[in-house]
Length: 137
Image (cartoon, rainbow, N blue to C red):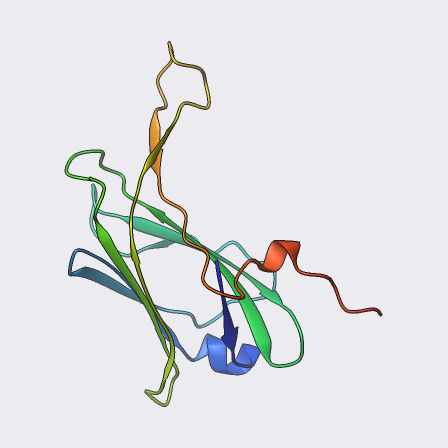
């Protein structure tokens, strides 16, 4: 979770890049709308995919919730380094986030069923936007 001090129009002209241990996948955000889930394959079969949810917050600030899905359980380990970069259409750097993963094991269907996930969550300072107070309308 993170926030970006950027207008919706600027966000739509931006490029989001997610790297894990120096393997990077960029995607353009043209067409992104408020509250939209943004499924975007950023690699080939068996490579990571990304989902992005965006919400307008205070004037000029967008909340970004990024789901980076591995599509492959092999090779993921505590200490993986993730870098998230958002560059505006003009090339300026808007967000530069770097975090080191400590994975938690999640078994949403119970310990005897398939569906074991390994999850790392990063919340950038000011990025816990689902829990922020909403402006009075």
